[in-house]
Amino acid sequence: MFSEVPLVPAQPLDRSADASAHPAPAGPRITVRTGSGTGRTRLSAFDAALREAGVADLNLITLSSVVPPGSTVVESHEPLEHDHGDRLWCVLASAGAEQHGEVVWAGLGWARDRATGAGVFVEHHSGSEEALRTQITLSLEDLCASRGWDDVESSTVVATAACVDDPVCALAVAAYEVQGWASGA
Image 1 (cartoon, rainbow, N blue to C red):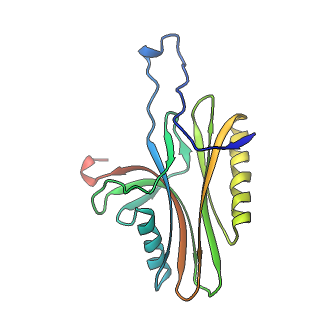
Image 2 (image 1 turned 45 degrees about the vertical axis):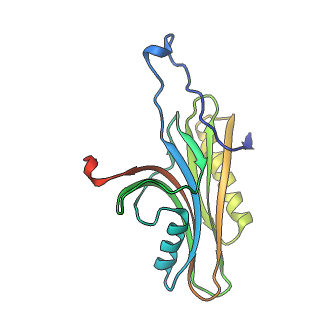
Image 3 (image 1 turned 90 degrees about the vertical axis):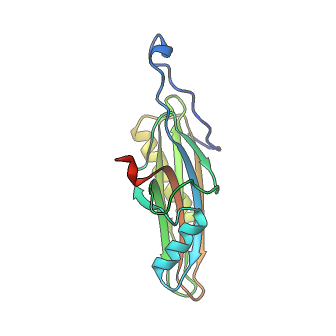
């Protein structure tokens, strides 16, 4: 059922006899990024991980993980264009640790129905990579099955951090859209 491949833009489904009269909606370009960080507190470790992922100076607004048809999902570490304090609509998985020797994992998985281009993200965190990847796979299988999607393309990203002395954080972010405050939304 699942084949893990990099996602590319899906071709819009022609829902009418004259597709030019009703163009398919264009979804956002969603960039998936990871980061890990260390700090003197869990919060500063989280900030360091956000900085490594390129989203530290944005206000994160978390979404419920639905990928609109017509979206593009790509892994990227290119900086997002933004002003300090802009809003970022995103899906976020994060995990932190404070105990010496503790290892944490965070990850995102995503799948998209090949027929419609619609998709979903799942976000998980765990103490081991194997458990994390299992949780992501099981969640994607369940979410796709409940939507009747049997031909999907999927992918996964994971991040890890190991606590030596100071607290650590690992995270994965799917960045949908940056929005300034003057936009009125």
